[in-house]
Length: 361
Image (cartoon, rainbow, N blue to C red; front, side, top):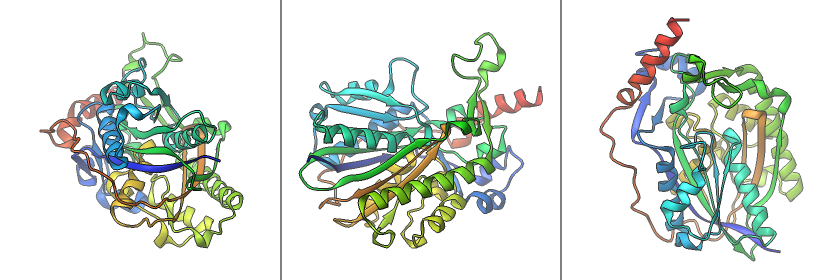
């Protein structure tokens, strides 16, 4: 049986930092209020296109695997904040990379997008349909944020991550996964006024609306992720105490703590970076995995448990058996275009627009 080993990894985090104190300059909030409720101290704001972030993360992942882009035969990109409706962003990345032999597919499953992509890519390799797959996950969520809404504006940030999957005879990579969707709760996380269900003739079409039912999301997220984790551990025959590291979706610290308790894993094994980046949606897991490797928290043969949930309400969990290599074979000098503005300067016209729209009723 063929397996899909993770041979490359990379991330792209924009340089502009939006702190909780920055948010307090235009929202009724404070660093203490945000930190005590979410664990988030700051988040990053993108100054360019989402595809620029995806391209940098992809190039760094390719370098880590010492792979040429023309060797790829599939690119899977998880995001809901694509550059355009058509063409898809995966094709933009394929063109910029020079991946002439790769099929290109976007996956819109919100925060669950990367894990869905990892699951799809792994099983296509197992089936013999593909051999070298690039999986990307990330968001330019600040572009669609309602900056007049404290309940959502404090939570999200921009970032992107990527991994390379390659055919292997060794039993490594994503060895077990469980994905699903509680569609009856699709209302709990919604971005409205954007899409073919909304009239483009309405002035509201210019303003993305948000529906975010925090208590409902918390309850369902913890329950679904914990059950999915239990399922993948049972399927793989791995005990929870044998898990070396947990790299979960970084929604907020309360959900991370509740998940660790529900699964029965020691909090010291849970990778956390939500304080630095906030919720970067489909970017949280690949960025977290890359940083865990950079920090030396992954060893050859480790079991890495991951879990996520997102709008839909989509959810999933996966158990990864790491291969022999934890260091990149090469490094890329890929960078985003220079940024000459602060996060507040980037967001200023968006903040003004949403606050004025809200005040106008």
